[in-house]
Each structure stands twice: as structure tokens, then as C-alpha cells.
Length: 109
Image 1 (cartoon, rainbow, N blue to C red):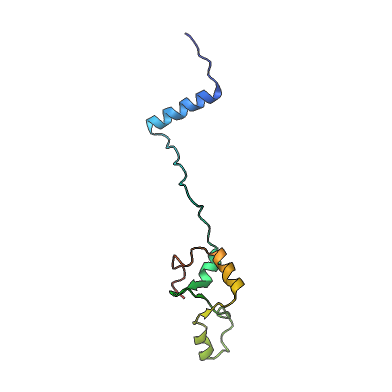
Image 2 (tube, helix red, strand yellow):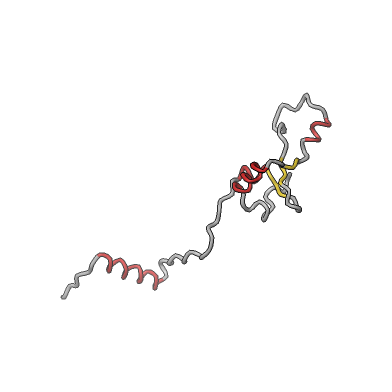
């Protein structure tokens, strides 16, 4: 019986090819060409929304707890959203949530 000497790399390549032919292993797909996907900062996406005209709106503070002593009028005003006017804040929000305009992430508020 004649034995063949394999290099380690050649042996690995042959085993991977045999697995691929038998269907035991799926070779990974090539990465799509283009820009990278950016992750959205979820806390920012929940607190802000963009209107149809492109204005950035924010929720109001003070809605969490300790609302027993506040009047009904003030409690009703908590549900409204306010426009963000600071340029630096708008720039920061766009960086943290780049797809905020494309997808409606905050439908409840």
C-alpha cells in the first residue's frame, strides 16, 4: 500500500470540498459591494421622530412618574411632541439614528 504525503493545507481544502459536494457544509456568500450598514442607537430612535416635512420632533420630559400632583391640562400636554431647533442636537440625532427618516421607528408617540 502506497501512502501519500499531504500538506496540512491541501488536506483541509480537500475535506472542505468533499463536505461541500455532499451538502454537509454551505460555503459563505460573498459580501455585497457597497457601503456598510450602520447600527441605529435604539434609545434615540425611540425618543425622536421625523415628520413628513422633515422636522425632527422629540418627546417631552416628566412623563415617567410623580404625576399625581400635576393638573389634567399639564398631563395632556405631555402627550404632544416638540420640534427640535438646535442644529448640533439635530446633527447628533442624525448620526445616532441614520435611518430615522426612512423607517417609521416611533409609531406609538
